[in-house]
Length: 191
Ligand SMILES: Cc1cc2nc3c(=O)[nH]c(=O)nc-3n(C[C@H](O)[C@H](O)[C@H](O)COP(=O)(O)O)c2cc1C
Image (cartoon, rainbow, N blue to C red):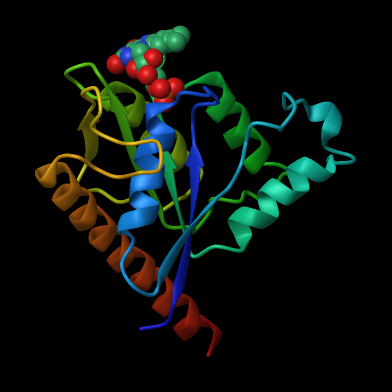
């Protein structure tokens, strides 16, 4: 199997984000041969069609970063039973210019953590509906609902609960298989 690079987007710009900690944990637990790299969204301005004629460099870089990876994991909190505005803004940039939607055909997985019992499930359902519209093949199982407790993730991504760590390893393996399937299909289509 070839080495793979997976990008991750954190749907929170909070300096104390527990979802960023979860993303760091995924980075640490990635299997050998898989590298996780962040695709930053915090510096994107608000999207407007006024930008379509001349995309700002930060938006071009964002789209190129998606193009450069074999798959994307979106790690997001739930805001008011949906996704945070900063994440929706980034996704809006990704579908423009018209006909150049960055997530089309890009294997994508969704995961998130909150202290609440449903652990971002409502946000993830909305996000999967958006990704389906964008033609992104998404990971169905396992679903990434991670309920946070204080200290579950350290700032540098250590996971203090063995069953959570095992779940994250299984989640990464399942997504790795999806990424591999699409990479193989791309090679076959190009041959
Ligand atoms: C504006 C706002 C709306 C929120 N709405 C929800 C919600 O609908 N469901 C939920 O589980 N938590 C909700 N929360 C709590 C977040 O889960 C919690 O703040 C979490 O730490 C955010 O993730 P982050 O630390 O990665 O930024 C909300 C928080 C904010 C600031």
